[in-house]
Image (tube, rainbow, N blue to C red; front, side, top):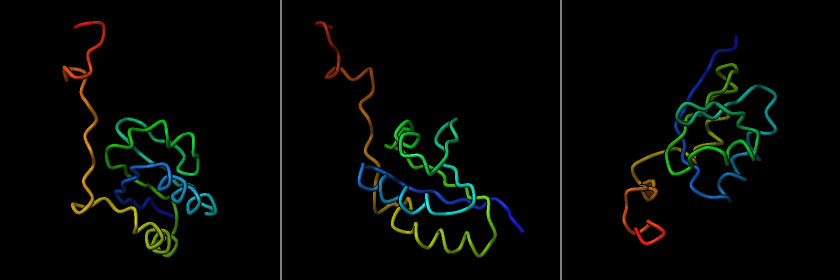
Length: 102
C-alpha cells in the first residue's frame, strides 16, 4: 500500500543537491521536495535549485513503508539537524547590501 512519507532535509550546496538527485532519480515512485509554498519534483536538478536552499526542505515520497525506509536510510546524510545550521541569507534591509548610494 502506498502512502506519503516525509522527512526534513538540508541541501546547502551544489554537491549535496547533485548527490540528492542521484539518489532520488533512480526511484520508481514519485518523490517531491517542498519549500515554502512550492512543491517540486525531487528528481529535477533545476527544480531543486529554484527553491530556497538556505532553509530546510521537506521530502515527500509516495511509496510503500519498505521503500520509504530504504529511501530515508539513503538520505540520512541530508537530514536537517541542529549540528548543521542553515546560514541566513542577507535581508534586503541589511545596509551592507544597498546599492546606488542608499
